[in-house]
Length: 162
Image (cartoon, rainbow, N blue to C red):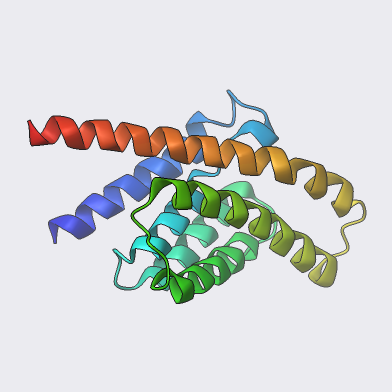
């Protein structure tokens, strides 16, 4: 029960940071997608029993705060979670370098999923010009963010052992 409360508190803190703290301070391609990093981590480690539901719910909550296409992030987070969960048992998921690489690839995949879904289901002219140039910087920022967050968590874990 405490593990569920701890995960809920961490996800809530990441949501608050992504929705309220980061947008006024950072421009869009240089703002880390903390919830996507959390979904990637949950999929690779398998720490949540109903992780697909959690990933979909996180995406829907993010869509509610963004104010545009409801379900876009929900669907893409769920698709990413299901793909990563299917291949996670074949990977050594405790490796930090693998997590950084997977977060970068997942960020690019998330952008491509958004692009495909917007082209299919909406009348969004010029969506290519908005999404494509921001994919590489967003992937690099997310990879840097996960390396910094994991370094912080490793230092905190070392302090807790003392």
